[in-house]
Length: 58
Image 1 (cartoon, rainbow, N blue to C red):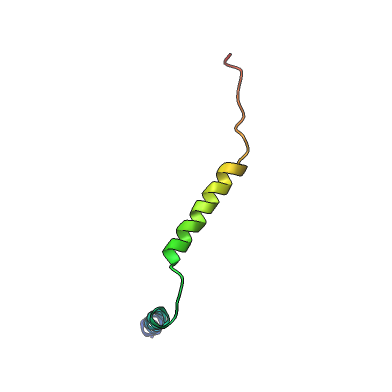
Image 2 (cartoon, one colour):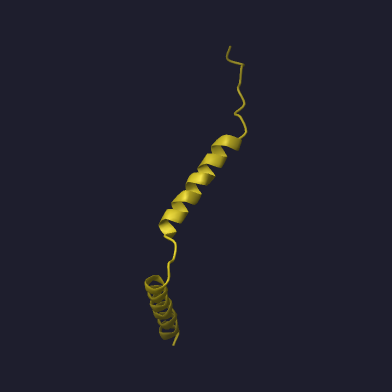
């Protein structure tokens, strides 16, 4: 009974996703995720703590 229940929810989600994509103006998730990752990388580079320099070698 478990495989039928999990397959039913997978098929329902797929059909609902196809319906929404065809009938509504949904954002491109891949583009949105890439923009978010680019923003996170930019924030990390700008606000990262500076590395400690060891001047013991000189």
